[in-house]
Image 1 (tube, rainbow, N blue to C red):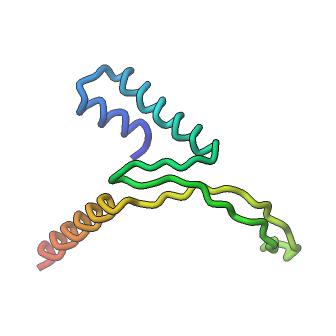
Image 2: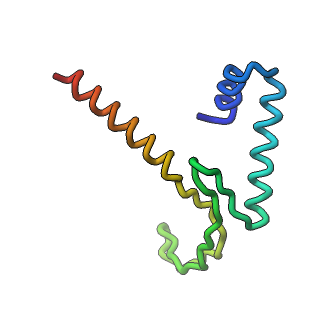
Length: 105
């Protein structure tokens, strides 16, 4: 699902004007980006947490030439899935697998 799909689904379910839903999604995502840019953690109960992890400077080799290069340290966004989401995804995945097995027989 991409941003446009999310807006379409929320618009279909909410009954609100499409522009209002689009502005709400844009505002939420912008606030999440600003929060992470400030180095803060985002926790959505039942869904998961977004946090920053630091990757230290690393010595690597250019695969084409073999020359040594240094990859500078950087922050990466890390998502830790919440337990309710993990359980629901696994339950849904297992149910789909069971349906697929029944169809093969």
